[in-house]
Amino acid sequence: MGFQMRPYGIQAMLKEGHKHLSGLDEAVLKNIDACKELSVITRTSLGPNGMNKMVINHLDKLFVTNDAATIVNELEIQHPAAKILVLAGKAQQEEIGDGANLTISFAGELLQGAEELIRMGLHPSEIISGYTKAINKTVEILDELVEKGSETMDVRNKDEVVSRMKAAVASKQFGQEGILCPLIADACIQVCPKNPANFNVDNVRVAKLLGGGLHNCTVVRGMVLKNDAIGSIKRMEKAKIVVFAGGVDTSATETKGTVLIHNAEQLENYAKTEEAKVEELIKAVADSGAKVVVSGAAVGDMALHFCERYKLMVLKISSKFELRRFCRTTGAVALLKLSRPNPDELGYADSVSVEEIGGVRVTVVKNEEGGNSVSTVVVRGSTDSILDDLERAVDDGVNTYKAMCRDSRIVPGAAATEIELARKLKEFSFKETGLDQYAIAKFAESFEMVPRTLAENAGLNAMEIISSLYAEHAAGNTNVGIGLEEGVCKDVSTMSIWDLHLTKFFALKYAADAACTVLRVDQIIMAKPAGGPKRDPPAGMDED
Image (tube, rainbow, N blue to C red; front, side, top):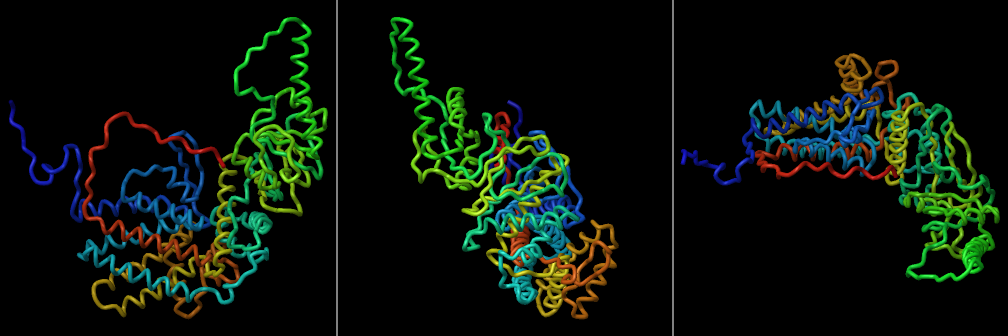
């Protein structure tokens, strides 16, 4: 038996193969480093001039986007501390649907400030208490910066909606917000319920069709299905609609039975009765006044033949989510088996027609007056990745609309708010005694990240811009931000760049929380990963 080194200390307590990091250098600064790396990735995509990232995930799907939420989702980040930032970004995306980039970049910036303070000799708990005071003060200042008269808004007034939505869409598709915003606003206003707080994001759909360009984008009241009608009837006006979830076909019986056939006539009659049965069913559907049959599964040949004979238009929607949405648009009730529908189970659409858009046949279901419960933005573009990016821009716009239905207050955009926050917090830090004043000053400096990044991404001189912004704000012009097109400081209200108060509020709050969470960690103990082959997590659901 050879000599075995007996483990001692913490090694003896834990199973072999685990890792244990403790102390400032190993745990805290390593965590901060990982988070800084992540925020460096997202930071260059911040703002309208942000760069795109090309991410290829484990399923070989290519993403070309500057949407931080998509980037960090697809990066599959392993480091536990960086994951905290990702979760903060995700929370922001779920809550508001925009501003995930600000959350992650700002948290990274806060942690970088914390690292400098730790190297100066401050203890993490002092930094945390300073950061907590700072975020509370920030929330107070943010409320003072709200534009007067923006508390009330008419969510059905297109101009007001567009002015609030512009910044969110421009940060994804700069230069095209003039085309996209009115479309998104139209789509949202069409489906806005009586009480705007109940607005459902799912009711604005995006149909991506290759070809054409941005100027071909349209809004359809109703749905756009990406498949052709089965059968020869391609158009119906003012049609009653019946929906069968189980498919339109002769159903096999539940029980098994054996039929003894003695001669040819019986065989002939057997086939005929089946035909007669199908015809009877389809006739019953046609007699109920329905003109369009929508099937959730396969449509049998014989059933299709009789549908043609009774002049019924047949559509097939295989995705059951899409089928539910279709029922919502038309107000139909999905029936399980082929039978005569009651009048109240029928839906209605003004027109159901098959159109050809860019070589793709799509079925457009329009509902102009009644229950405008779903509207679709038809997005056109030259490549798939452009379409995906446009879809994200539309999603951001729709989410912003939902946020403004809840709270319509706005603050100046284009980094005007951030500089003002930085200035006020700096003043606040001088009034504090104790060591947290350094942390508050660092928190204030972190706000400079936004104008600096916006300027750098636009290729301007960041130092000049920040100093001239500070000068303007010190003179009392709190609405001055960066005009990216000319590269000079301008009043935001003339350019009408506004950010929602909610977006800023949650982004800064989540960022500060994430930063404090990372700073609170002083030891990392990792068990040995479980053996066995590595399984990929199941692939994502279909686009829905």
